[in-house]
Image (cartoon, rainbow, N blue to C red; front, side, top):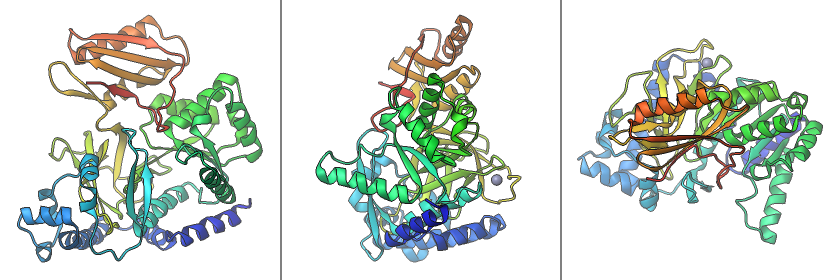
Length: 451
Ligand SMILES: [Zn+2]
């Protein structure tokens, strides 16, 4: 399909679904260069408008504002935010209906997420939020690299399992595949990625010649490991960029993907509930989606300084149907106060360290976060994937997947580093494994704590 026609088809589908992202994209492309103070001011106006709406129309927040004795007309700036509760995924699930606005004037869609816990969750999204936060912000990030919608794209996604195996379910799959193919997107089901099927997928992609690949990080990594194992030439696919999303991507995995495909990897960070959170620019800056989300970075309810790990908490400025104020998306990031050499004034984070609940308990109290392990294994370039399993407080099993046999020196280094953190009574076992399959959600769970 010609990319201009594919883009036209893409845009017309978005329009038909009520997700016309183009006006929002035009605004985002202007505002990314604006002085940050000007954008902060616009953001503040949007935030006050949303908070007033919540105080009047959303039962959960109406009660929260009552508790602190604040009325809608009293809200003038963001200072009131700190008095409102942090909303976790658990809070949202348990009180979901109370987050619905009783002023149902705006159209919405229902999306499903597999959820990191494996429990599916159907949630409502304001169509304006879908258009602005998801598609416009994604389009802006992609256009930084010249990979607009419509180019030939291979997408590794868990695309088939979420429909039932009935006639209707199979028709839905066919309709989706037909629609994706008109958009110039070739879908690769994450679950079909094994030694048997990857050769067929590879030869199909050789004919399709994708300019870009987009995938959940572990799916992209697995695809490249399989090509490598079978001696299939990834460079021959002609991929210019590989966008990874959904999970943290350890440096060693990035290096392997860039070597196998011979292209740059790009970080797209977001979640279904609030859309794109950050996108990497060609100068390496991971820019926040500053116009659509109000950000707070917290550590134990405190504000850490730039450069420190923090939990990311967002307020979605565009969802009036199920407003999310102070929503803890469940990730640890490192906010930065540096400016990017690309000239865009959108604030930066320096890394996405993975799920905030992905941690190991230390016997004497405290936790080791996922980022610790990412840094630990970055020091062992042959280790491309790892899984840390804690079944007892003083026992850790470390599974390592590596491109070559791991030396006893390297294994001892891992053991001694962890004993230093966990205490001398902790037993650490390091095992090299031949394969690391993905979880049911299509994601890879690299920290498994059963405590
Ligand atoms: Zn930049």
